[in-house]
Length: 386
Image 1 (tube, rainbow, N blue to C red):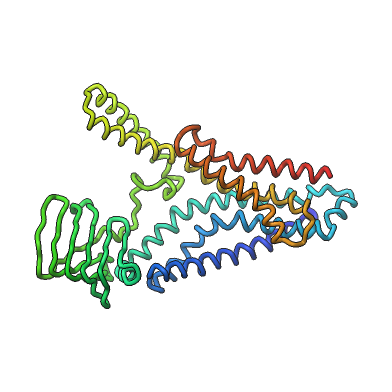
Image 2 (image 1 turned 60 degrees about the vertical axis):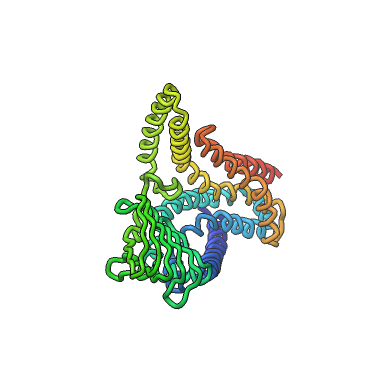
C-alpha cells in the first residue's frame, strides 16, 4: 500500500470513527436515557441497560457513518483538486478507492456479526437487567403510565401511592407450573427477593380467577410468587428468528420442517374427514409454522444482506463525492443518501417481505444491495472514465 493510499484510508477511518462515536453516544445516551425516563424506568435500571444498547445502535449507524466518511474525504479531495492532480500524475483514482472498498467489505461482516451479538448478548442482558429490578421497574412505569406489560405479566392500576398499588388488575400468563391467573384487588405490593430474584405479589381484598375454571374471593393477604418472569432463558422454539443466534437457526429450521410435514399429513386427514372445525385449526397451525419456517430460512441471508449494505453505500458514495467536487460534506452526504432513502430502503423492505412470504426463497433480500451496487459501479465507471 502506497503512502497516498494509506493517507486516504486513514482519513476515512478517522472521520468514520468520530462520526460513529458521536452518533452512537447521542442515540444510546441521549435517546435511550430520554426514552427510559419517559417510560418511567428507574435511573439505575437505565444506566445498567445502556451498554447493551450499543450493539443495537451499531447495526444501524455503521452504514450511514461510513457513507458520511466517504463523502467527507473524497468530496474534500475533489473540491481541492487533489483528484485532478492525482490524474495528472498518471495515477488512476481507483488506486485510492480499492483500500477503502476492502475496509468497507470487512466492516460489512462486522455489521453482520453485530446481529449475532444482539441476539446472544444484548437482548438477554437487557432482559436480565429488567428482571433483576423488576419491582422498581414496574413501580416506575405504573407511576407514569398506570399500566405495565412484559412477557407473561400485565398489570393496570388506578393509582400508585408510594409502594402501594391501588385497585390493580393483574393478568399472569400460564406457565409450566400454574394455569393462567387473572386477579383484581383493592391494593397490592410488589417485592423482589434479593437472593432468588423471585417477584412476590402481595394482594388484599380481591378476587382471583384461574385458567382451570377455579375462582374465589379473598379478604386477607394473598401472595403469588412469580418465579418464571425473571428467567432470561429464551424459548427458542417460539422465539422470533431475529432473536436467535446463527448457531441456533439450523436446528430450528429442521424442527419447523418436521412440524410442517406433520401438519400437512394431518391436513390431508382433516380434508378427508370433512371436519370443518378441525380443518380450520390444522390449516391455521400449518400457516403459522410455514411462516416461521420461511423467516428462519431467510434470516441468515437477511442479516448478511443488511451488513453488506455498508459496502454498497461506499460504492455509491465514492463516485458521487468525486463528481460533486464540493467541500460541503453535509450537502454531499444528503445527495448520496437521498437515492438510498428513496430506492434502497423501500427495496429492502419489499425484498425482506418476499423472503418471509417464501415466494422466491431467500434471494429477494439481496435486491436492494444488487440495485445499489449496480448503480454505484456504473457511476464509478463514469467518474473514472472522465
